[in-house]
Image (cartoon, rainbow, N blue to C red; front, side, top):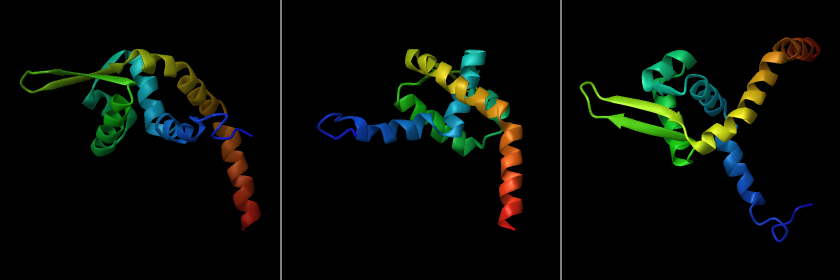
Length: 120
């Protein structure tokens, strides 16, 4: 067992996993890796996410150093998002998680159906 003495940063893992493990963060990372640079509304449209949620997640990803935000002072204002170097390094595990979810959708649906049937 890892104790605080043996692993002083282990308690902070929860903080990191909360950010990189939520569904919107993973989907944003995958989208930005695929398209390289996207504007806010392009991300919103591609993901089917609310404006408020997208804004919150992008701010957190930017704060954590995973996403770069570039503001262009034009009319109307233009804001573009791209992956930072660290965000690019997270793309491979995020993509693996997304691929796993896609590969197992049918099995998950079947497991849920069996569980729901047994629960009734």
